[in-house]
Length: 409
Image 1 (cartoon, helix red, strand yellow):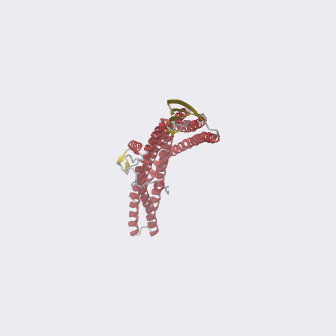
Image 2 (tube, one colour; image 1 turned 180 degrees about the vertical axis):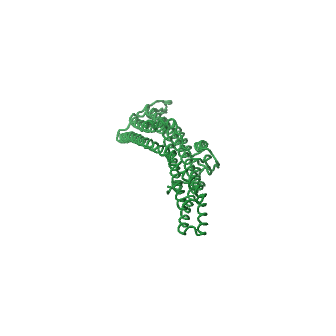
Image 3 (cartoon, helix red, strand yellow; image 1 turned 90 degrees about the vertical axis):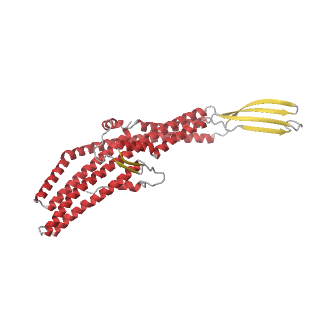
């Protein structure tokens, strides 16, 4: 049975050059799954970028109260009459709108919260990617182990057939058929070895390291977390709070941006101080209070309308994303149930039959009481059945990882 070499596809579409500029140069060696996840969350650039984005937003807190530049003016000359040495000094300080800082601060808090939720989602995605690459490595290793074992048997049969052909016991056609079937297993073995190499590089890339090898190569069924198990029984419980909070936060951010634009209708205030010397009079001081507002409201009205549409779009986007994840939840639930049923069948029926078929065929081979062509057909049937089990187990594990991506608290 031909395999879909998905790891090769991942290799083609992923920036797998481990010498690329900026790529982590850590040599992790043999590492467990938990250690790989911890290293990735600590060192991956996506986590650094998400954290820096939070700090960037927090750094904008100084812009909340933007009072504008202080204006200084000095006048000298004939300011009030014929006296040529009059002078006037004035200072004006805009204060801006007294209500917009409140809305700016509320918007800033929402953006910080959204950035924190996004960082949590990035951590989830990176964790899932490491788990997937770990499972891919185990899958490739299981295939290589299978083909290595079966290739040894096929080579024994081929050698025995060659001797029989030399002795004239079998025809050239039978010998060629055995050689062709052995070559097919050999080709699968080569592909599996290449898959394992690609899987190892993909795992290192997911860990943001130059070199890393999974410590546990044995392919076993992954276990669902408690949240994942609850999601299977009730898909409505699939979504973790991080996703919902992120979607709700997008709505809240656009809503507060809209309120901020509306607040800009409020007039802006300013204060000032003047000091004059006019002819013989000195120390003439005065204070001013100003109010600034636009005579034409259409530009600000346009910005308010744009903000309103962005808020409405955020509401629709969040509703769509929630529906999309709900559908994804149902798909994952059905997939896992089907894959679990198939695994149970393979474990209880198909694999024992395949093992019995192989033992019986090899016993007859050692006793010299079997058709060599039939023996090779039996071996290929065993390979196909075990391939099916390995692939089904891998798909099951990937589904578990996807469920954990959305459910883990």
